[in-house]
Image (cartoon, rainbow over all chains, first blue to last red; front, side, top):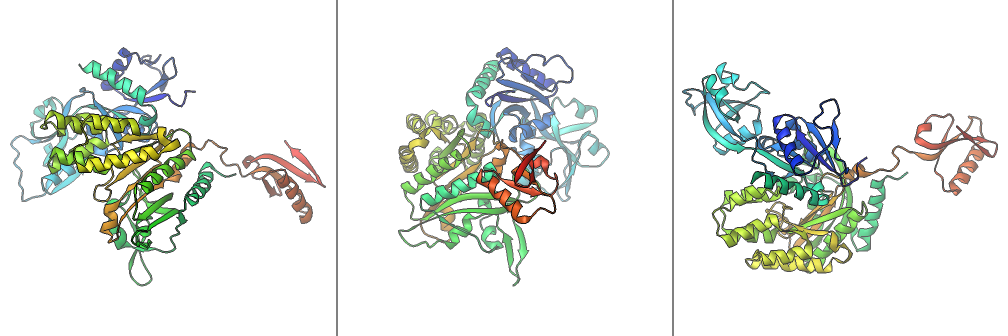
Length: 211
Length: 364
């Protein structure tokens, strides 16, 4: 059983998480067996001071806010959408993309009508259009957002755009950028009070890596 | 068996009484308007309402502070000190439904001075020490934060962005919000996220980073210094941390938040809310805090679900006076006793015994 000052780290499953873990590894924070595959869920370092676990990327912030993880790596999109009460210690500068408004090529906004917006991010979309005073109807979808304007389910979409190739291949265009997105190192507020030294060591390791 | 939560509540009542705080009991309901006029002061904005017998719109209390301010004597030169332990009704952060939440705390209302502020902080530390030895109280001062931001001359949007960045210790976002400032001012603003540590040490860091920029910051530092000087045994648990930011429409003095290892959110929150006092048409100022005692259950490692030390099984024809005598004999040995006619509830007692005549026989 780990000691009470052991640091629990929630890593996002997938390419981003692998990239993040390699930074931990290079900085001397590694856990045996983490690359082995298998069904093991939690991986601890030899000293028992650090534990890693893989979770669904959109759940990292929940684990951290609720204290099941002391730190984790979450996308800015998730932090903006769910507004978890966590410290955002560092922009890791990886997983870069942008939150944008896209629509069918040639789209022109008819401001006399309520704009139909399909998105996985209703809070971000709602906040963006509220700030512009534009009345919208949000259609919450869980995937294949690009289909919505093609099938006339919506006028526009608000979604993450990385290279824009999916949009182009489907005769869609990016119209407005809402904000830049990248991976952030987040920390539970209470944990930070008691495990600050270790967290700052990890922050410094990431900062070194980013130089 | 008393839970940690119950034991803490008992300790805190004694603690607050020892410092002259009178027990405040909410005996009725407040009108909805009392809370609606100051909705942003509430921990969560939602309010449970119902229609009173005379048709007035009433509310199930989401907060105790406003009732105390309303009921305080508010005589010139007087300080009213109250403590309370009450259930409040609110939607906790991250939850989707109202919950009944136990909260205890103090309010010190009226012509308060730096002693009263220091006492509130000291009592906050003592309150958390009743829960665990692993605790910290982060303290900030809204005057210092707003003084630095005033001096930086940030526009409304930049100021809002700076405060959001401050709350989440987001250095990158704070640096972006003050990108246009000269180096000295930028250093002062960045100090809000970078200066953090034991109160007395961090006050020195505030001075040396050039964050004492105007009368507002000077007055705030004087108060913080006096609190550090009066902290006594709590000094090493008090940290200056400007990420503690409460709503500036209500709070204008010290603000603080207490954390205990193992509880993922602040167990205690408080501060000086002079602006709320004046909004409610009262004189002076007020300082207080609330302890969200339900959270203590998260670290209660005591035996859960134990009702009694001994399950005493007695036949249905046992003489009540013999059973009563047996119970009192066990009680005299300091044991708690649950009497049953069968072994029902065995799992909730440490030991099961059968009464045979005047003798106890242990049941395996």
